[in-house]
Image (cartoon, rainbow, N blue to C red; front, side, top):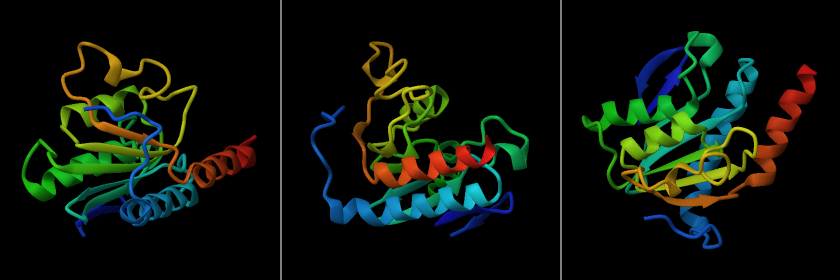
Length: 171
């Protein structure tokens, strides 16, 4: 498994949204993504966490680090995808699943497609910045080469509350 700690990398076909994954297989990775989101909030980052899993094994986990790394692409999904690719030695994450606490933005949605992730599980919907079920709806575009299976709304209330509380403290 790989995760980001203090900026260092250390070892460690579209489905209808109404269909839900097996709660037993998705609960633990989403709980780890939530933990990464809470850790990001403690660092002053927008609380988003992501986890990449293959065959029940966590390959990588990360939280947002855009401020810390001074990198606008250091979203949780991007960091977790990069680390998982390093972990397995490939730019493709075939048979891998991504769990993330917020609907991915256009950049992250495209990276998910390019990495050929099998499934995307996300918690909170993002009407303003999301690109999966909101906004550009990237995976519905005829120019999108790979569409992962998508499951939204897992642990939605917990993720939404974490984001709401984070931004409420800053207003």
